[in-house]
Length: 124
Image (cartoon, rainbow, N blue to C red; front, side, top):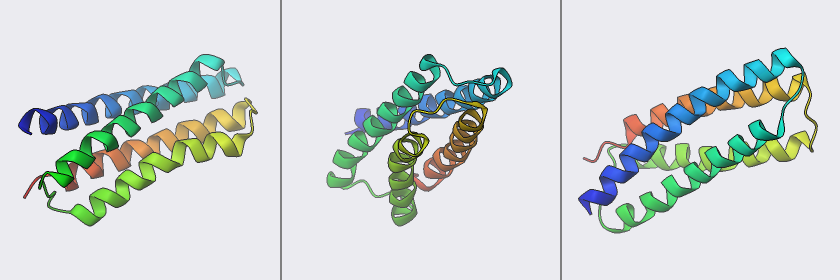
């Protein structure tokens, strides 16, 4: 189970880096005035990474691993899982400057959520 826990922790680092890149990319899209299809695809890749993180965490939890802040860790995970798809659905395919700024802000928020989830995920 330790290999799974290590992969779970390393995937969090990947998610953090991806979200940081998406924040910057979203700001560039806002300066250009439009969200490109590549950026939207990258948002979905980030969501897939978050889903993979949750799927890796489930067997750890079922196997007896208990993060120090289990309740908050799960709240952060639920927020991370639902926020990007919700914002993408809310934008309804629009791809202007406003949407780019919204995506960048959401990715910045998720970056904070990912860092807090890591802090609460220390196994006690």
